[in-house]
Each structure stands twice: as C-alpha cells, then as structure tokens.
Length: 272
Image 1 (spheres, rainbow, N blue to C red):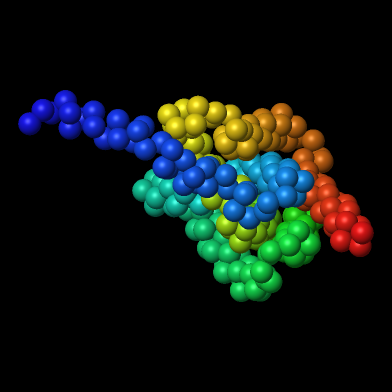
Image 2: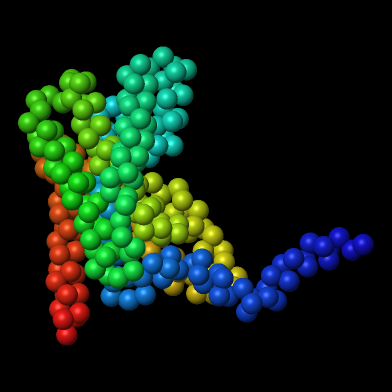
C-alpha cells in the first residue's frame, strides 16, 4: 500500500469536492445570515456586537486593574485564579475569583429565567425588542457600577467596596452574555474572545483553501479582536481619570440610542 497516497488522498478528495461542500461551508462562515437576511439590519447588529465587545473588554480591564486582579466575564481566567489562590495561599485572589464565578453563574441563570422567555425573533422589530429587553437591565447595573465607584473614597484600600463593584460588573456581563447567546450567532462571543479566535482561524483556513476570499467572512471576527485590544489599551491609558468607570454605561446608552433610531425607521417602512 502506498503511504503517500493515504496521506495525499484526503486532501485531494477535499479539494475535489469543493463545489459540493461550498454551501455548507458558506453557512458555517456567515453567522449573521442565519439570524437576519436584511443587509441593513445585519450592519446594525454587527455594530451593536462591536459596541458590546468594547464594553466587555473595558469592564474586564477595570475589574482586573482596580477590583482585585480578577475578570468580570472571562471565567476561564477566574477558574485559573481559583487554582492559583488555593496553591499560593492568596486568600484575596481566591475569594474574588470564587465570587466572580458564582455571581456570573447566578446572573446567567436569572437572566435566562427572567429575560430568556422571548418571542420568536423572526422580524427586525421583534429582534429590536429582544435587544432592548436585555440592554436596559444591563444599563442600570452599569450605571449603578459607575455611580458607586464615583462616590467611593480611596477604592484601592476598600476591599468591601471592591467586591461589591465586582459583583455588579459581573452581573451586568452575565446579562450581556445571555443576550448574545440568545441570538445564537455561531462563533460570536463578546464577553471573551477565545471562541472568536478559534472561529477566525477556522475561517481563514477554510476560505484560503475553499473560497479564496478570506476577508469576506473574517473581517467581523478580526474587528472584534481589534476592538477588544483597543478597549484594553484605552483603559490602561486613562484609568486614572474619573470618567473611566462611566464609559461602559455610555457605550450601552449609544447602543440603545441606535436601536431606538432603527425602531423608528423600521416602523416607518412598515407603515409605507
């Protein structure tokens, strides 16, 4: 038996069946097309997801830099911190990491129970209501987070307030996580980008071999990664300014404002 043929044949077979698998690959590489068909609404949702990515990265960096070196939504890191805290005897890190993991789980469960019973999202207006129904509670949590931070004196030496702010931030990120998962965008996760990077790598590989148009299906995932990076850099640069804790609530306010404009225009189109 020719071993070379055994090694080459799967690759040749895959390339030779490119036409047959094109439809399946295209579906896998077009996450928003499974949810929305209107290019105008797709652009809106893409922009909203990038805003939420920016918000999640900002809150995570604030939590890590100022609230005890743990994350608000990146639970993989927090599970690792639990292990570090146990082995190294770092009680402060251990307590904060356990609290973050627990509050995030509670937020996911409650958000799914209270906000998860949504109507079928078959029209732009129904999707609008779903977005708003999740973003409004998140907005209130982020506003409370910003105001409580603003009126706290010497946060760096106030462990109790750090934990309180961490709980509020984590709960808000849990709501945001349920929102994105509710829409079931394949490969799109705004609270942590591990899945996004995996999907980005898959699409780059598949598009290069199958479609030879890698940018068409990967630009959004690349934009997500760059948005996260940009948000983290800005937080580090301006975290000493008093407005830094208000940025997440401002970002969600912008998202809600965009949704209101979209709702108004969509109703006008239906009325015509």
